[in-house]
Length: 357
Image 1 (cartoon, one colour):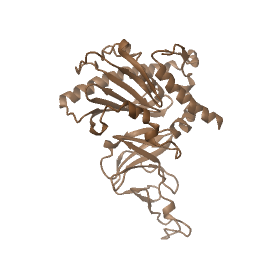
Image 2 (tube, rainbow, N blue to C red):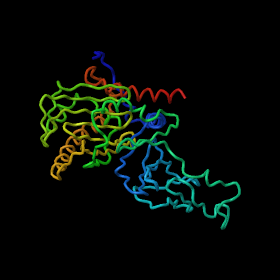
Image 3 (spheres, one colour):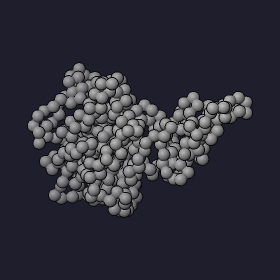
Image 4 (cartoon, one colour):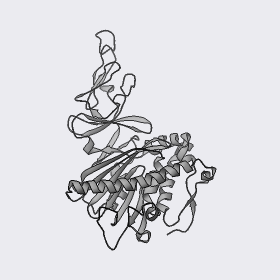
C-alpha cells in the first residue's frame, strides 16, 4: 500500500456551477453513464425521460421490444417531447405542432409544415428529420448511454468491473425490491466516494453492520474501484450486514454491491445540480434464489437504514464545503482511501480536457 498522504478535491468540485458545467461537458458527455433499469421498461411504448450532461434523453421500448435512446426533443422546434415516465402507445406526439414519430424514432407526420394541407414542402426529407439517436448499451438489467459516438465500446470500457464480477452468474439475477430515496442534498461524487471506501463503515454503520475494519481491503482496477471485506464467519441475520461483500463502482455513476450469499444491490445516482443527486437502489437475488415477502421486507428495512446513515454523512460533507477550510480538499488516507483518490484523479483528468479546449 502506498504511504503518501494526498489532498482531496477542493470545495469547488462539489458546489461550483462552473465546475459542474465542465463535468457535464466532459465526465458525463464522454463516459458510459448509468441511466436506468430494463425491468422498468417492460412493455412496448414504455418511455423514460432522463437528463444526462444537462441534456434531455429519452429511453424507449420500441415495437420490437428493444430499448433505444434518443435526444428527447422534436426535430421541428426542439421542444422536450416526453416529460414524465409513461407508456406512450405506438406514437410519440409533439404537443406543440403535432409532429409525430414512431417507436423507432422515424418522423411520421409534420402537419401543414409547408402551408395548409402541405405536409411535406419541397426539399423536406422526412427520413433525415427523425429523432436523433444516442449510443446505448444494455448490460444485464442495466441501461447505459454514451453521448460520445467515438467512445470505447461498453464491454471494453467496463472490462475491469466485468472481471471483478466473474464469479456471479448475472444471467440469473432477479430484482426483488426497489428503494427510491428521491433527491439527496449532496454532490453526486460524495455518494460515490463514501461508497467505495471502507474507512467509515465501523463508525457510521456501527448499528447496521458488523464488518470489522481489519477485514476490509480496497480495490483499484482501471475504471473500477471500491472495497471488499472477507469475513471468517458469515452471519446472514436480517438485522445487520455481517457477511463478506464487495463494494464496486464503474466510473462515473454506476454502483454495485455483492453480498454473501446470493444478493446484489445496484445504485442509480443521477446528478441533478451541484448539491443535489437523485438516488435509487434495486436489490437482486442471484442464482435464481427466491425470497419470501418477509425476507424481502427485512432486506428493504436494513438497506433503508444503511442508506440513511450514508445520506446524513454525505449531506454534512456537502455543508462542510461552505467552509474556507475545504478549499484545500481535506486529506485522504493512504491506506483506506486510495480508491477515492483514483476516482478523483479520473474526474480531474476529464476536467483538464475541458480546460485545454
